[in-house]
Image 1 (cartoon, one colour):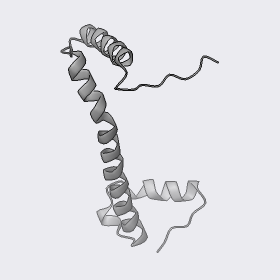
Image 2: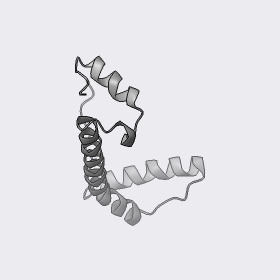
Image 3: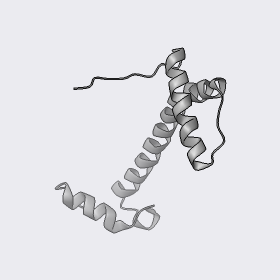
Image 4: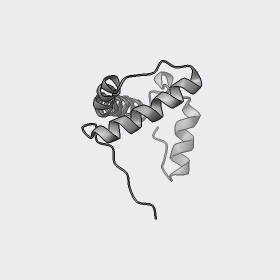
Length: 96
């Protein structure tokens, strides 16, 4: 067991390591590199971006679930067979 490694945007060594690794990868793929300051700013915003994205996706899933429960097949974002497959796979029943 190697252990765990945590990233703290306030730990200078962590920021330097992540910035160096990201800049090596950026250089390999022709992507513009970032300074330590820019990398720290980006790292500080990641948690907020992930939380916001998760909330948006959860809301969209609830809207789709409401359509399924109301049997509103013509307004599904995914093909109806997707819902039927998921229901049958998990032992559910199709509401009619």
